[in-house]
Length: 261
Image (cartoon, rainbow, N blue to C red; front, side):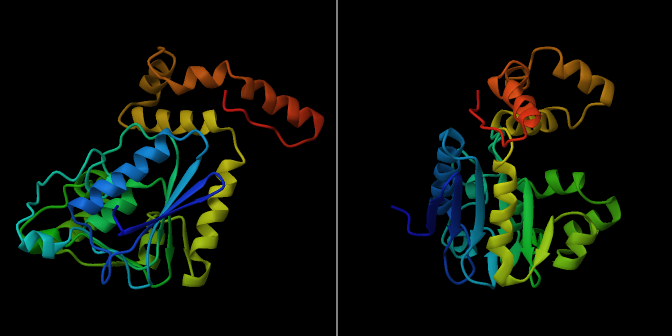
């Protein structure tokens, strides 16, 4: 059993806390355990949203455990089926993940946050990709996901200098959804999770699927693709019981009862 993770079910929310003092750094065994947790979340029909956070207030995660690297763990080691930190290479996860960034997210810690769908961070949080100063590269999503989120000039400065971005700047560039006090962090993440849970699960899955698969397409190409029958979740939504329940509940002035089918 890996003791670096604290996993708690809170109704339909799965809360995963990375707890590896002093900096919540991630070695291969921890990455494997995180992958197992996220894949179990993916496959559990009772769970709707996951929240990933770090223990303490200093570090969300310092990324790859450089002590493990010094002891021989290679930069291209097997970090498990979910990729580094268990989430960065799960490409079929149609349930939302919220990163509650409680402190410094460096290197792979920043890449873990970028792999989430929503980011809530504490006011003192900061983000960086310092890999070039270590002779490696941010290849667990940093050089792939961040270019889709930032203007080129800002992106290149972060990637090529390794400087840290403060929470206020991350909010200005739209990298994070909320910047709150440390005391409000988990409550804010849970509130967002509950707002998601209030909606139809198949609709949420279809939103994630369509956004993911059409990201590089033109609007016209996207229309053609979603109507081609190639998607899994979108056709389910159109012919689901929930698609009938939503309008019916609205007309009757009551909250819908989602069945996920």
